[in-house]
Length: 362
Image (tube, rainbow, N blue to C red):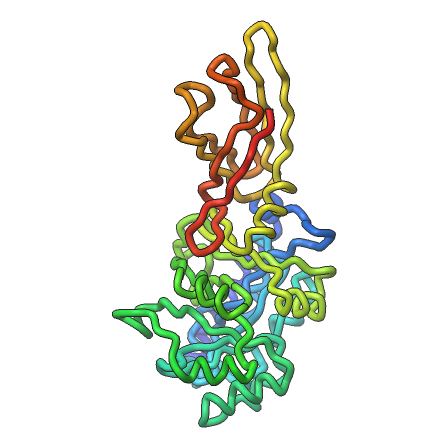
């Protein structure tokens, strides 16, 4: 009876999301322009299903990805923690196999992953692009990570700032150093669920690790109460296929989209900004004003903070160009001789906490 009830609940939820996804894909589509001659892929590499401690069926995760406008997901069920195993039968690869079949049907790339779930240190690690999760059931965490790497996995440390793991501080332990020096850790999760971890950003820069952001979703994304949207890793790859995605991760070609903010490498942020904005201007000689029309083509708003040293009323102090929106404003040239106006982009973050500079040419 217990199994039948659980199955019925899963099927009812699945049916609901199936219809919902069919009719809502377009209005919820995330968009970010391609940059550097590469495709911009919207990815979530940290997802759970009922095959570990998640609450939904693997195919549901694919349909959620469609609804949320993603291109790529990874199923990363816990290896060592499977509270539903009496009711949900299958080996450690089964959730991926189900999701992969659905991904092939619906056009979502599904990557084979697993979460190595240990106490701190080293905490939780995700292994992406594995070939057989069953071979990762080993006593020693270092042996597990070594086996994942033998399978060609991309391994990264999950949620270093998670208070359940490190309630009082955020520490890089000796075991992380050992794994890092062996080349067994290639990335680190800078954003997880509803938290940005500045320490992880700093380690990524200092140790040349790839930055990732994931939802770590266990319930539905609708019920998870993300502040704005689920965290997304933007991956810049030649194609939407596993080999190209893996190469892009190895080259650290990622930005993180979290709470309407982009985090990552300064050069990539500039590329994203330049390709997101369309700027037109018109000079009115009689009024001595330059009129601007700026369109933001991406799903991330652009919040521009004018140089506070400008004379009053030269330009609005804050210009917010919403996602897929545009604004009109003018620069009063009677206030001084300007060739350009300097701004900070409040929600484009590099070097842990620095805002991107932007120069508006007059």
